[in-house]
Image 1 (cartoon, one colour):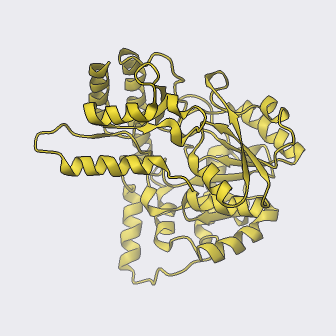
Image 2 (spheres, one colour):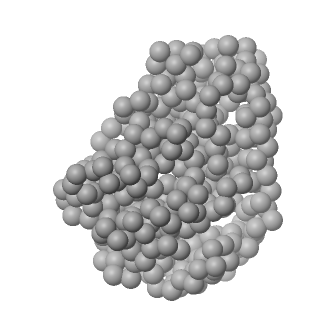
Image 3 (cartoon, helix red, strand yellow):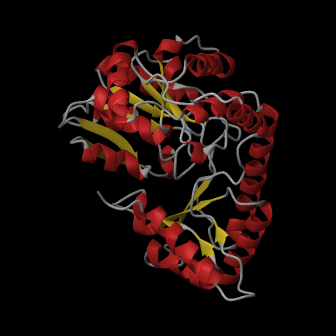
Length: 376
């Protein structure tokens, strides 16, 4: 299991901040995809009430409490006009806990799973640890860093599965609903199990949003309360499963995790009613994105794909250093900016790219642009 290098960057930046002398420049934290906002106020109140009620807050059902599963089903009706049976929903220990459940429920050791590069590294690392074989599809700006049907048709043999992410980490790219529909229907017809990572839904900037569940009954959809709902540390997510995978997933979840955290389920249910606050959080990301789109060309980053969603910029660093790890070290040393080298996201081309997260406060974004311009 290789390291998840962004976690190493976090450790280095933390150590640097702790040992910095008085008056040293603030380290701007742009390495991690964690919202700068905390638990929504309505969710805080629900948690406080639960703690004061004297309830045991013990184990729950393996796939989550019925009230949360029903509220998630209502979410699909509200956002996608899609009627979903709550019994097809599995509440999980974050999206990170959903991926091993999905892989074990849907695949056998030796199965081949295709995915676009750059990618979120735990896809590959978890799949490999479980005896699956990732099939990497190198993608660039010309396809919006997303896979295509033509790429799948060129594979021999046909893969057993396909992972897509829209919006994607680290690029922020999205599939148009028509492209998503075509991919989902193609996978369903060819017997390719589609896993759609939709954890950044709600954080999009103009392109229409759609769920793979709207186009395929066999797709597995994974989502989370970490990003739009600003609940990273509460470790709570969900899956929308094909009916035939519900019971096997439940058995796996019971043995792996017993149940999702009870208190987190209470907070998550309340978070659905915090729309106004969550939209205000999104407005901050919209402003940060606009600032970077304007400022990055002035800092020498002229060619990049503007992100459609999430809160990341994926930038080519070759004009500044021959290796993105060396460039990110230089960023931390000379500009006190923590950023993530691309090796995490693309083993073949990651040396040429790095990722900036724009979850930071707007003052930090403005400061980061100024520092990057001074390094040019």
